[in-house]
Image (cartoon, rainbow, N blue to C red; front, side):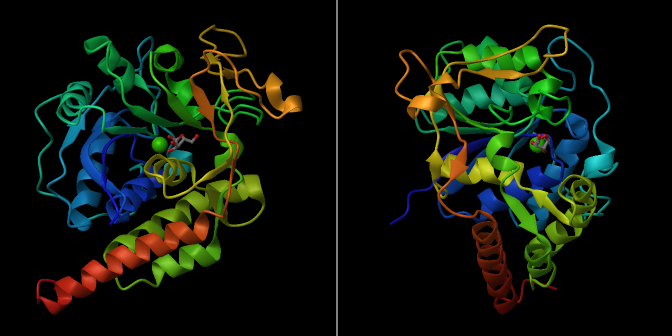
Length: 330
Ligand code: RIB
Ligand code: CA
């Protein structure tokens, strides 16, 4: 009997965020109990629109979505990454518009409310800049949850700068607060996400699905692949956010994930937004470090791409068939 873990997802719904959300809705190990949006790939408002629309397409319009921070703690929203995710955040794919409304509370307030409601059980999955998580800590300093963050780079180079990954770079002050808080964090950095590639064969399998959600994701990925072809030299993409989601629910296991001290450079110099992870244990096989709270996932036991596609197709084709049988699908 698998146990569904209650999940709060904090996202900047762009293309890989959409994959992560669809994956969590499809996973038998997860129950998405709330979603907050934050500016990053797109504005928090556009991310909320995309999230509502994807939830409706997935038959999950009952999942509450709260609008989070438009601006990072110490700056203004920079305008998003249309060259990566498209101007609408989902690869210029037009999703059917949801009729659902946003929750009345802020994303930070929703996170605090859910942490209290699911005491000790809630799993926080942060796949955008960490502004909402930092705001929630300001509201509730004793907020202690299982936190999985897609962000940073430990031994690998950065993305948005030579040393900084996008989610951290967008709000280094928030990331510094979140990594310094009194809780255990699992960091899913570029070290492992850039090594977990989704190939064109995977995308074609999604496009060929009988279900609308996998097809929409396959269409979104066409845009994402064009960006990443410039990095990998072939049409494919990293799977940053869905990998963080799969690690958070325990569906995917890390092969190497040392627990180390980690901080964030909040200076205005060339290191701004860098996750400074103390990886000096590398040469001794990462012996235990006293007081360390940041588990840095460096590699996986198995390839993630097939698991992602199988989970998405298995769930959404199954539910579509069931709805068709019930005569509810046009
Ligand atoms: O660096 C990758 C991260 O930045 C992902 O979360 C992607 O969606 C962007 O937000
Ligand atoms: Ca994201």
